Amino acid sequence: MTNFFYKDKPIIGLDIGSTDMKIMSIDLNKHHVTGYGVIDVDPLQIRKSFDEDGEYITKNLKTLLEKKIVGTLVSNRVALGIPTSRTFSRTFTIPPSAEKTLEDAVAIEVSQYIPLPIALLYVDYEIIERNDKALTVIMSAVPRELIDNALSACASLGLSVAIVEPSISAVARVLKTTEEGFLPTVIVDIGATNTDIAVLDGSVRITGGVSTGGNTFTLDIAKKLSVTLEKAHQLKVLNGLASGPKQEKLSAALRPALRAIINETRKVIRYYNERLSNDHRLEQILVVGSGSNIPGIGDFFTNELVMPARVAHPWQKLNFGDLPQPAKQFRSRYIGVAGLASIPKGAIWK
Image 1 (cartoon, rainbow, N blue to C red):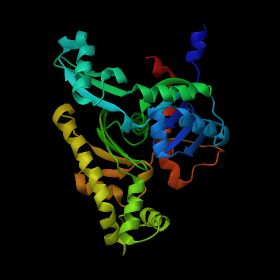
Image 2 (tube, helix red, strand yellow):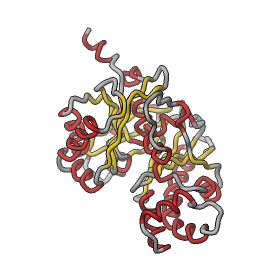
Image 3 (cartoon, rainbow, N blue to C red):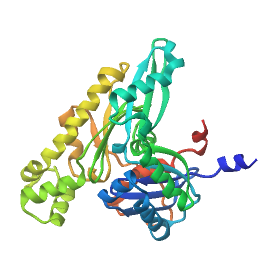
Image 4 (cartoon, rainbow, N blue to C red):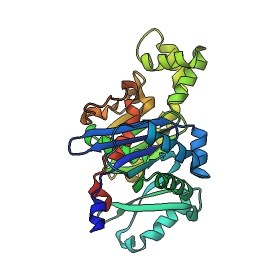
């Protein structure tokens, strides 16, 4: 009997990222946010804590839970998001006759394409598509030390982790229901220091990334235009790539970092088209994340990749009720944790 009560406990989302930690609780019946919070973290310290010990994670998670919550968290049962850049994901196909030896096929993929011994990884896999000719398998791996430290931090503060997933999977969950994400879609998630790229076609089929983000844009503008970081941020979010007297200088400052993101996006698209598409045509590019707040960035991606692109605004389904909402310029940073908090509790047990 105890198990049935446990299974029915609501899920809250906890996203431990490379520059912040976010938490959110949603009443899925009403799409009503009951509580949320965020705390900024030092990128070097959080990485060290993932890799060596969980003390820094624990300290900041404690502060988040005790001092940074707006509203109420309805549960202590957590869907945990981890940085996509710290995970390894691949999609591959095998003949149906090889299903009985699928675990061996996964081990081969790990040894060939992941730069860590399998003994140091947690590896999970799932058949996401099958037909008479082939089985399509998605495989994800993440360093054991990272997961163990994050789980230990959660447990020490009374949080029970029910599921762990890369943050890009949580982003995809929100986009599937709010931004025509049922179409084959390229997701470009521009964070503060990293950009995660994925193809969403029913599920996330492939991921990629680059160490470039919103902070890179600000630094490049400050250097190119010889202005303070505060002024550079203002120019980025108010002018960006939009038409105007400053467009030429701003475009020149932003272009190198944006070019790095475009090049990685092309690689991801090429891999999908050549190996995974099954004749599915990519329909759109959705740009999300805290670094997507650049006027004109959607048009830039459209022109560079010759595919309809836009900045996604998936907040129309979330109701904050009487809670004070995050400031408009910060809402995009919550998309991943909203996706974690939106996992139906029954889905975990399938």
